[in-house]
Length: 286
Image (cartoon, rainbow, N blue to C red; front, side, top):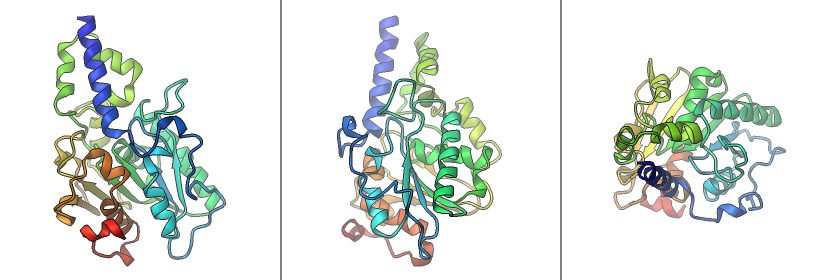
């Protein structure tokens, strides 16, 4: 039985890692990778883009690897862009999003304060991938973030948790497996649909007043399942399906947050709706 639940743990971790680890660069080079002009704390927002953008990586991601395409994309469009590491377990320096999500939200709060102080802005916008699109909602709802965030864009966020294709439903059949995950990778078990964290996050409604929400999903998501669970309910919410923008876009969970310029164009529209342009298949080349 011990061997069986270890195999389940390995499968659980592999499925999550394969879904959220960016493939554009080796994780071992994360600390030395060029940042293409982002995380420049001397950056001052322009009149056209007065709010800095905070990028929030997904599970097993980090502040560099998740954003090798989107960060330069936004910098080129005149934004001050910042990204953080969060949820790294003791001794870990490469893979984030594994610690308790409530603790990660506090780290996001601290980082946001740092960005606001450096840029002299009054609010930020946020774009998050997977857990990074869901975790900020805890910050907004419970840690005072609603007063400091104008817009939250979620790229394939696990807004209401995920079944990971039903894999997590096996946990009760393997004694010790769930306890092991809770002890060692609480950032994973917090994301399971129906967890205490997910129930607390969504109790009383998905949104808080004063924040603009956009969720961008793909029908090919193999991690946050069903993909329809990513949508938010409430005022000032826009739920977007990638295939309604470009029917031939086949991006799955990883690609929508790491390389898909069609999704990024729509995210940019959400950040600056006054100057939004139609997102189509041709947005992949803009």
